[in-house]
Length: 305
Image 1 (cartoon, rainbow, N blue to C red):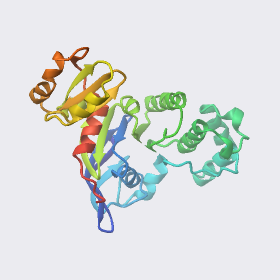
Image 2 (image 1 turned 90 degrees about the horizontal axis):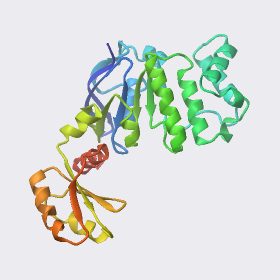
Image 3 (image 1 turned 90 degrees about the vertical axis):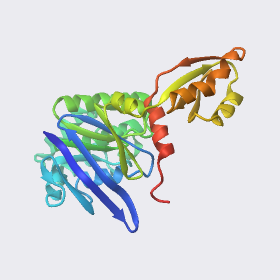
C-alpha cells in the first residue's frame, strides 16, 4: 500500500507556478528523501501533502485519504516538522509537549508527555526552557512533538539544518527505528549523506520533478561520467579545465580534481593531454549523488525568474 500517491500536482501563487505537474508515490514504511535547490517547491509540495494547502490542479491520496476533500483528516494522521523551530521558547520542554498533547486531545496529558519524553531521551531536561536548548536538542523536541500523537506519516522539512554531525546521525538513527515500526517518512534535505540513508529519493527542481528512485538508480540514470585528476597545486588547472568542451563540472577535493561530463568520449579527449604533464595523473572515478545534484541544478531554469 502507498502512504502517498499523488499525481499532477500544481500550485500557483499569483502568476508563479511553484509546483508544476508533480507526481509521487511513497510506500508504507518507506523513508524517501526529497531533494532540490532552495526555492524548488519542496516545502509547498510537503504542505499540500499534509493538508495545509489545496492544489490548484492534480489529485491523490495521503494515507488513503483524498487530498482535496479529506484534508482535515490527513492533518490528524500526519506529523509535520517545519524548517524553523516553532515552539514556545519561554515554556519548558514538558510544557510545550503538554500544549501539543492538548491540541491533539490526548488524555491523560501527563502520561503522553512522560512517555514521549522517555522515548526520545528528554526526561532529564523536561524542566529546561525550550529557548535555552542547543540546535540538536531543539530538533529532538520538535521530533517528539511530531510523533507524540502516533502519526502514520512523518513529513520532515530540512529537519537537520544547523545541527552538528553527531546530532544529525542520532536523528537519523531515530528515524530508521520509527520506520522499522511501520512509520512512513518523507524528508527534504540538502545533505547528500542523509539522502543516501533513504530507501529512495525524489529530486525536484523549480517546481518540476526530475528524477525518482534509489540513489544508485538516480546516479545511473543521470548518465554522467567522472574522472579524478591528481597532482599538486591544481587550482590554475581547474580554471583551465572548466573552459574545455566536454567538461561540465570541475570540483577540487583535497589534492584531486573531480571532473564530470555527460559525454565520455568528449571528456576523455578533454583530459588526454594531462597525462603528459609532470606529476599529474588521470583516473576513472565514481559519479556521486552530489555530482548529479549539481548537474540537475545547472540544467534547470528558475521558475521565479
